[in-house]
Image 1 (cartoon, helix red, strand yellow):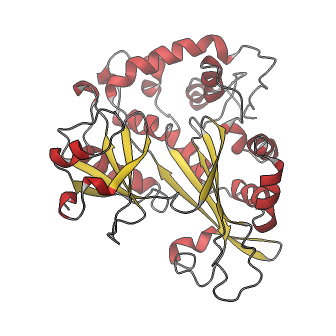
Image 2: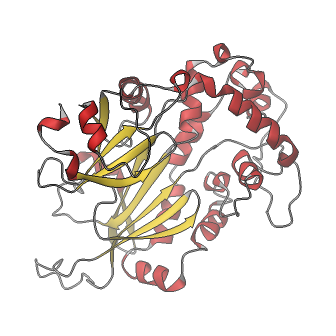
Image 3: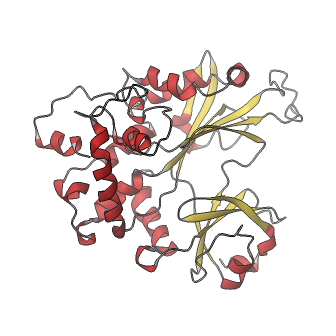
Amino acid sequence: MEISKITEPEDWEYFAKGAANILFKYIGTNDYLKHKLLRIRLLKEEQEYISTCELYDFIELKCKNLFPQQIIDIQLIVLTSEFINKLNNQGHDLMIRERYGLLLPNILDGNYEELSLSKKCQLYYEKCPSDSISDGDSTQDCDGISSVIFEIKPKWLYDNYNSNYCRTCSLNQLKNVPRHFCPLDLLYPETIDQALIDLFKPIPVDILDKIEKLIPLKKLFKIYLNNENNVFQQLRKYQKINNKNDLIENLTSSDDVSSNLSLIMTLRDVGLFLKFEKFNENNHLHTSHNNINNVYIVDGEKFLLTCNIYDLDLKSKMKYKYWLKIENDLQAIYNSSNPNWRYCTKYPGRTNNNDDKVQAKE
């Protein structure tokens, strides 16, 4: 589909920007494009650039096999240089020669308030609209919260055997990012409570109380984390390195970067949208076959918890030098002692077999 045939550049406004892409939000009147975002590539050096077509194939053919129900829907669309040039890019340089972009749903479409909990974690809560009781349901509190979304970048998820600090916490210390939570605490029954305490701590008490009146957020999150098929456990499984040749410390050139390592490094940088809302039996999305396993019951009430994975940008082999530099910089932090940073949890397993040695060095 050529986007310029159904919409004008003026119908799109700047929404957000990452390291490799820029997002535009649709504000026009075309029903098909409502609630959609347009993702376009930012200017990159030629040797590091991966085309949108290659990214699309990577997501559709590689990633969706691993996460068939959770990866955010994407559609490949045709761009023209004229269309790209007329977008309000807020001064950011776009890849003008790129002839394709991605159309994706705006998960945050609605009346959401945003709370920044930390650099890699945001909370969004949607206020219930005043006309939400059109069906006469007096149990719905229209002054309350109708849905809550956690946006999280869990980064590296693995079993830590012998370091004081995991890779993510070490990198945050290196970059002077204040501690919020350790992603490894999300993985084990023994540490889930601590993970949730840390995760919820920055949320103002009055806002959390308002949320909990309608959506038992803490209970739902705990139930989800205790589900062995939750997205964090799946990411841990697919991020696992089983071949010592894929260890970053063993890379000497871009030729050493296997397709498997590129996939793993991509999965170590994905973002997640975890959405919590009351189950509505009149909502066809809530009752769809895809959500059969996403319904949770707390205190006799049904709730829907859905997960969307985004930011599945295939990592260029040319990033190996950057990976090596960061790993070298982290060596002094892994087993250091920071009075302002609690030690990360260690996996209670054996460390004397080859698999353990590979994982311990990730």
